[in-house]
Image (cartoon, rainbow, N blue to C red):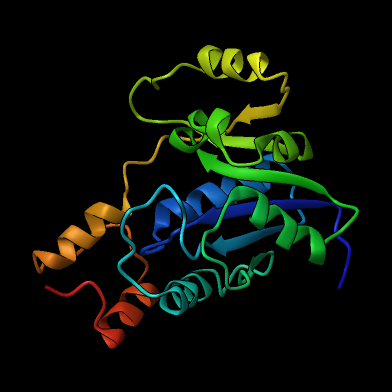
Length: 201
């Protein structure tokens, strides 16, 4: 495998992937001057109680969404009972060793960082690129830093200079359930959802 210098890691359920995800990835790639952004649909994230679409369907939707962006790559995770952040990093590291790693995530996920599994091993390995929220974030960044400081953890991070996105996968699934045309889903992904009969009432 080629060894790239600046590698973005973008994990999520992507149930379904939407244009907010794509916007975040594009802006992070530009801001961080990333050589590649690795998209990793999670199999069974510990913080989500319900995933609607299958793992293969979610991978296929991501693959469809990023097909025209050469520096976006889909990477499948090996079958495991759960998908922790450390698992995502280890998978990427196996394919792209000797690289600088940048983790793309939204504020809500970033605020939970002090509670991540094996965070002591993961946090120092990456630079965290954080998408802001529309409303004032709670907890504040100072609270997150204080929690990490108490755990003797230091991190490299940056807020991405992007307009906060209001799109959510939950709202998109609800639109499908209500038989409304969802906003923020690409034409190609909509076609895949239609052809596979996903998110139908």
